Length: 361
Image: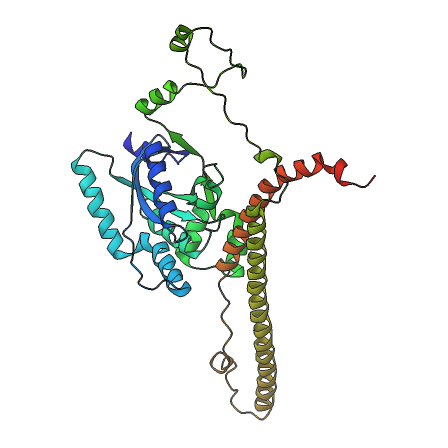
């Protein structure tokens, strides 16, 4: 029975509301520096229940310039696989076991800005967890998106095909063609469910609802006020009437252009490798043709032929650069494109609504 339960793949991740608040508070307080931490829970019939979370210790940086800030973000991004934090995580889990709390490590969480989280550090962290336990996920909290009023919390894991390719550390063109691995097969999003405790659910049900009738009748006596106190209607929101371009859309477009430039840089590097490879192969072909002609002349003169495999010692073929960075960049471009699509849906509707007043008569 236990073995059968281990073979059940993860269908969804269920996060407790208290864990969500912990992650949001930690990521918001550390913004713009990357925040990381560990999550614990248990797996139940394909549902990964995340019941607790704790942050990794932060590294204090004395200076506040941009270089030191980048160093702090790099150290925080690499915190889940640092030796000191691995020992800290084991110690925290041991303390949780002593108080009878779910103490099974089920992954880690990290903060992001405008969906910019798909990078080599994220892959290395998730691979570090997933190679030990396949039922682990990475929770990504986008602080910038959440500041608009909608919680942005998503769960990801590495695909089985990418785990195999990353273990072999072969991301050449030939290996990718054989495995048919594309940038869409790197990470898999796991459906996320926010779960409230019974106590919190009872509290939410006790919150008074909005009145059905926006027009509140005036009381006729003091007894009416005591019996049914008046409730003010919700203040109207005029944000939906704002026609300005969303600043988050502009920032996402800038990040999208940067990712496209990085893609072209990676493409130019690969084209340079192909030119170098073609040049060396042409030299090898010339050398082999010359050596064959020499051996034919030596055989005609009844002399011993020279070895024809010396080109392996004389020439060195350039090593093909890894295509992993290009795949991650392509996946990040796809992420930005989806965000732009989501942002432009509301703005396009507003523009079409006022199109008649904008056009000259």
